[in-house]
Image (cartoon, rainbow, N blue to C red; front, side, top):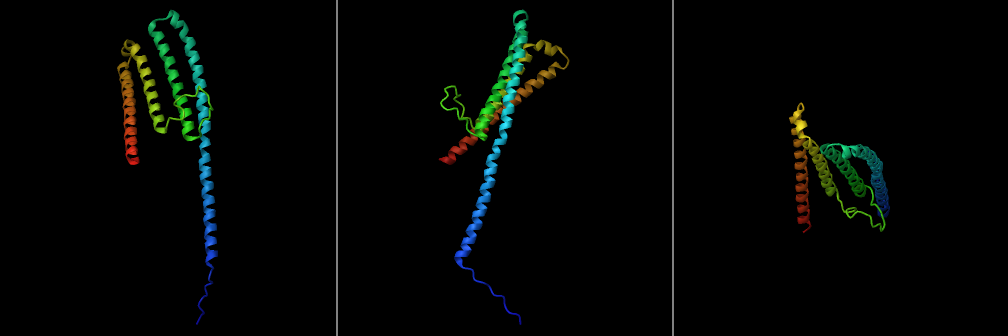
Length: 202
């Protein structure tokens, strides 16, 4: 008859010490992963630098449009001058949109921008949440769409006289209304979400 295996009694303090060491190793591993994930936010910085370069390209485009507008403003007709001015407004709105995305996106997802006591710091910096950023984004897109639509309405006779002009104008109006509806829905959803959060806090 084979002998029964003997179990060695492990002291309780050694068992607790081994469990604590294992728990410490797991915590260190977890902390390393979390630190790596948190540091990965800096991968967004090249994207924002690229957007800054995009603003520089828009500046070049703005300069070309401005100098092309000068002879039209002095010797051209009013419709062409208005179209040129609306083009400048359009480029400016896109540049403003990029600037909002850069500042708000960097502060929301990467790090706070330390400007010290600079009096030129915009009031909205540091106060634009992700929800506010979405609303500002859709608002800017609607404004840009409105400018593009206004360009067509200035020369509406030429547009309607052209081939498929009615369809072009109908598509532009439809896209603009879709963007407006999307903006309203964004605002309504954020308001509902904010109301639910406030009720939970109470």
